[in-house]
Amino acid sequence: MKEKAEEKVKKKGRGRVMWGFIYVLTFLVVFVASAVFKLTYNPYGKEFSVDWDDSVGKVYTDISYGEGEANKFDLYVPADSSKERYGLVVFIHAGGFTGGDKADDTQILQWLCSKGYVAAGINYTLFGDEHPEASVYSQSMEIKKSMPYVVAEAEKLGYHIDEMAIGGGSAGGCHALLYAYRDAETSPVPVKMVFEAVGPSSFYPEDWKSYGLDQSDDAAKGLFGAMLGREIKAEFGTPEYDEEIKDISALLWINENSVPTLVAYGKYDKVQPYEGSVRLLKALEDNGVPHDYYLCEHSGHGLQNDNKVYAEYMRKIVEYLEKYMPVEK
Image (cartoon, rainbow, N blue to C red):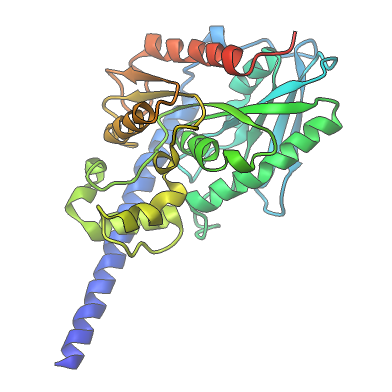
């Protein structure tokens, strides 16, 4: 009897691993397909770009912030270096946690720099065959580690940074929210605001129906555990689960002191489930956090069917920057 019971436990364990593996692969295939789309589609338009030359600014590329091959950042500095202080805007790249590069965001980084800000794009170790140990959590910790290096490099170049904003898209949006809510207290300079589009902010199986995770706790634990970087042991729907997943769930860090937040989501998003963004909106409302939430009523993860709404979101980024982190005159 004891042997049979042990074998049953082993089979259950193998089943959990198998389902977790299948769902992780499914998630990554869908997310990477979305990332490829995001990297080939230009959502910004001429209004949100600049003819970049020395009269606008200068870029310093592949500056190291750690020993990892991916631990590099690009720094864009305004041509006018005469001001006593500058705001820093960090933008984290998309790519489904498995792809993408800071160079993909050259256009928006140049645009932000043209507004008078020091801008930075940061790479992080991607999950894949070369780095199966990477996770959303390990990536977020690399981004956290990079910030003092970014500020110090700007100082070396003669740009004194005294405050910052952070933004991103998709996977980069997830990381931007995590830094703004989870890591702001340890930031080398005060974080004044966060902006992002379609970034996952919470991980509840009932929201992730597009992957069937509401039908299998084992599959959900497999996927979310891979993103967390360790096995999830707590049962869903318990305070213990929230505590376990908190390291990668920006939603669970929101409180009345959280920074002003600007977000955009697609109503038909099946990659980062729309239901998760509704939770995010409620948490911002319940805690009285200044925020704007742009809903693209006809779009999925790419927000490609609501160009007018997306343009409003982009214009609102400028409004937020001018309100919460104005450029020194």
